[in-house]
Length: 343
Image 1 (cartoon, rainbow, N blue to C red):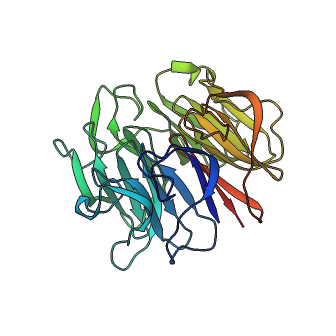
Image 2: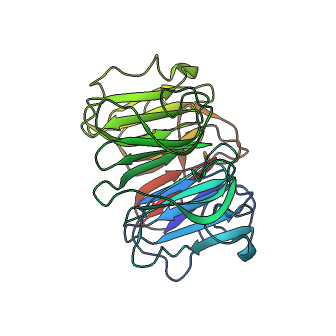
Image 3: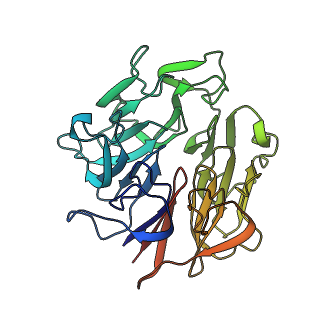
């Protein structure tokens, strides 16, 4: 069972309405909805994508620019999950989302985009600022996309050979070294190690190797995102990586957590957070399954931290109650939205 809470002005919580809520409510789902936890929960400014291990993809929320992958003529706002069929004879493999756009990767290697962006977010070349679902790139079968992440206005893709490509806004250096302010089509970024995972903040990108021996930040040093970064090798044995707009959070396999960057609203993890089984980082907040509890922290103006009246949750572990039977299995977080799956 999937529950959601937080910002919902575009219907992105799939609750059948467009009102914010600080109380986790069970999402409205179609009959074809899988009974297993999703592989990915990713969110744009006002839309959400849910990808399942079987390759089935559902979306909800604002579609005013076609960012949900559906034609604008089919609806500009969806308040419950809609199925997005994959291209013929393949399945969906990975998804990411920026403010008003989405990037969908198919198992056959095709990369598709939809939505709107005036800073190269679509990767379709100069002058293309809006599109319904359309293929942007086809990497070779020998080197398909293995990971993808999007910030507000840029995207980083990592191929199976460990090479890194990016497109979109580049003024802050979030796509790697270079003088370009905008990269309109996928461009290779120089990285001197084999990358395996990427996350994107608002104006930076973070990539890390599979063993955690090497990592790098692309972008400026606002909020100490570079200068406070752990030294090389300090992230060896990472389990998952997430990023707020101005910070990075790394969950290690031993259960410890390393985090750095912006913390004015409590974005970094509070003291006393232990026994983390599932962790998700949103635009300026985080949620986790810690032991048998759902907890949240950070910027919570839209109720996305589960506290009545909204407001920031700083320096404390705020427990959020979820009605109904079942075990808390996984969490997700987006742009002031929070998600939890109970089995």
